[in-house]
Image 1 (cartoon, rainbow, N blue to C red):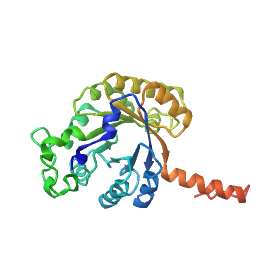
Image 2 (tube, rainbow, N blue to C red; image 1 turned 180 degrees about the vertical axis):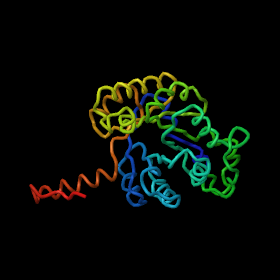
Image 3 (cartoon, one colour; image 1 turned 90 degrees about the vertical axis):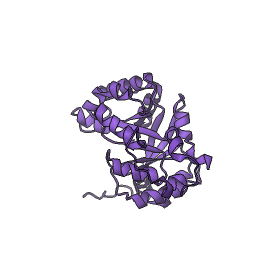
Length: 263
């Protein structure tokens, strides 16, 4: 049962070693297990932009469990009740999108912790996280195994990044360059020098504050830049995009010049 309170991702995140992972946007346990068997360091189960229910996420956590890759859940929004559910079904690492202020960040820290430090509901005895009350003193010991990652993906979020990174209980920052580029007026164009400069500034600032830093970087050259700047959690693939691209590439081989479907 002691393994339930281990978080190798969080332990490694305190070093300079880069952990590479996949964004899972297909709400399927089968797809999640295929990705888990590939050997990536971590997998994000996306509850923000894809139709994952709490039951879908539970199934994916179970499918990934036998493999050494670490599951991370991105919640729909910074909601206490949803974070409580995600923790209770056994997720140890959580990504919260669109965190713009220190006030929001402090609220997310409270959502991760039991009273009196936080507001997490105390039904651990019936939760998968405790293996149904088989983990001794879970409520007293769990904080060290939980990892809270807040997304900075707007001009406001990046402006407040130093204050957010100063908050105890925030383990790391994940910079969303596509949303950031859009917030800066560039409609998702991550290649803009202004955007890349801001990503570099954010990575170096957060690392200097002792936080882990993640970045979504499907472009290999951009991923290499982020690693050189100090990012140590880099998303280099997305299951939905990988599937779509692989299927199109295969068909292009046999039907060159075919008309692509447009909607």
